[in-house]
Length: 166
Image 1 (cartoon, rainbow, N blue to C red):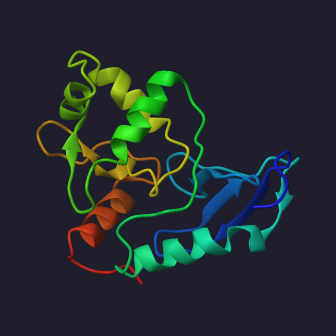
Image 2: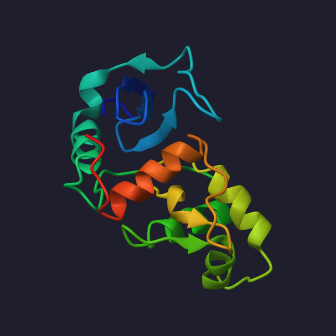
Image 3: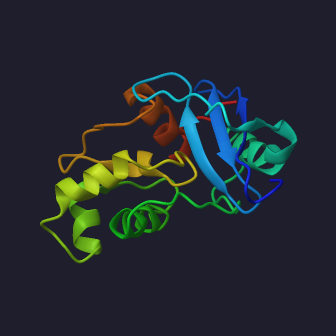
């Protein structure tokens, strides 16, 4: 990205719809859906800078084509200490696998924190790269996703080798 103080952004087309990317000189800070259940628009103070997101865009393209399993772009989602713990734990869920909210809470050492884990998962500002789509209900059902359940289903199908999205 460019200067540390300024937030830059771009939007890109993807097989699951338009995505808004935003970040600064140090890290990607947002990857949001432009359409869906939780939509996003750029802050008027942000500077449009597509070139700042070439690497992120290339990695997303490779991911959607089924050629990339692990992202290595720097990310900084911010958040509370608890949210940060949950978001780090999401990145430990292997590509192609899922984990329930309850199992994630147990892995974090607090089996009673299922609701808090769900809220943190839903507040994840860097979708796909921090793979909140890999979290499912305790009964295996697909529940809650900012890009909508069809998008969640598509991402999981991609990761489970059923089809590339590109």
